[in-house]
Length: 235
Length: 115
Image (cartoon, rainbow over all chains, first blue to last red; front, side, top):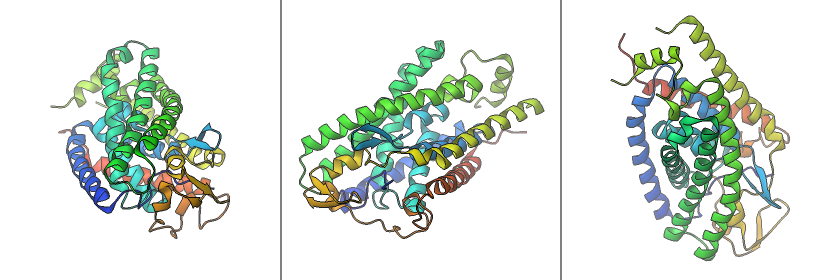
């Protein structure tokens, strides 16, 4: 059984891996400085748990076609629950733990994977969630649909990141058009699965602790939550 | 101020979230599909595969893949020492390590409210 889920070393040229490694490092430095304002005594443990949850759910490959499976990337879960800056760090931590502890995802490929899933995926999901935020705040159905669409597009755009990297410095003779069509086709199917899992996750958290859902902050809070929000509001 | 009741409710929620993550990584992982994922399906396209799912012949992107630098590490491939049926243990270890790393980092980065 092969549980490898992420890019191996050697799929793109060393120069390409290096360029994306630098982009990932700069992105993470910016994310770390921006994340601070979203982290407090309550949201910091939440972000830690969300990261552990994404690690767990990434292990669950679900069948999409005969002989092919998919697994969660988690971009929409983190974007909606803890926001894009904290969320991109969550996904990057998952990728680093997988590469260092479980030999899943090449070490030189970490930059490409972080750019694809932690940045392209998370920020696509957050963009979708922002566009649909009014809808998401109005009803439970709206929130679930927002989570589904954000998750679906997060997977597809993350897969396009690989296509871009393959176009820039890919190894092998497989045509770019083939890679593009297969990546987008398969990841649209995976995105449907990710959408369902994401909607279920967001729905469960919103049902018990809506105050811990980043996207819902400041919307129709219960009285006791309003008191806390004022206290914890960014100065 | 944060009331003891609210603290307890938050702790209960966080513990519940952790239990779900542990159950998924430690139990549900046994039921995960062993078929190649979306990316692997693409990188293996064009190759015939051997019984282990490694490219045997043909021309595919995965031919360029290099062995993982840490392929011999104790938890490589989500198994404990390469043992069969240990994916759940590896999963639980992964959840706890991820929680420690992420929780620790976010706790250090957090904004301290003036007392």
